[in-house]
Image 1 (cartoon, rainbow, N blue to C red):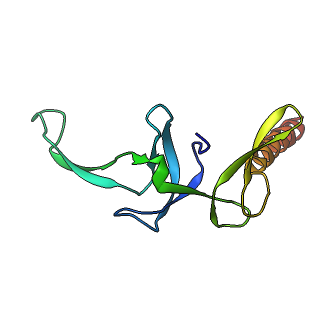
Image 2 (tube, helix red, strand yellow; image 1 turned 90 degrees about the vertical axis):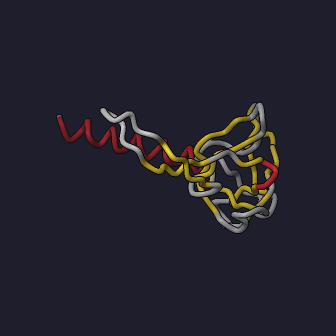
Length: 124
């Protein structure tokens, strides 16, 4: 499956078509995703009278991966994903703009390392 946790996806069809959200959970075995704010149902929970209260809880149910399209962080359009080989690694790339989708994650990790090194230097 080419969609991963914390990717932004757009729902293509169904009752929530047109909505976008972040992927919370991926189930590659059944090819389903749980997307934040999409396919939300209400569940009535009965209390036991001592510790739990009776309430109505919003539950996010899984969506088929064929119903969603990945939104490219660079061009902002829903797109398909192509796996391209760079060196020894395969990288997910956007079919529309051709830029790598996993590059953003590497930049965030670099920023975290920079802030850690700054904190260490300030302590000294």
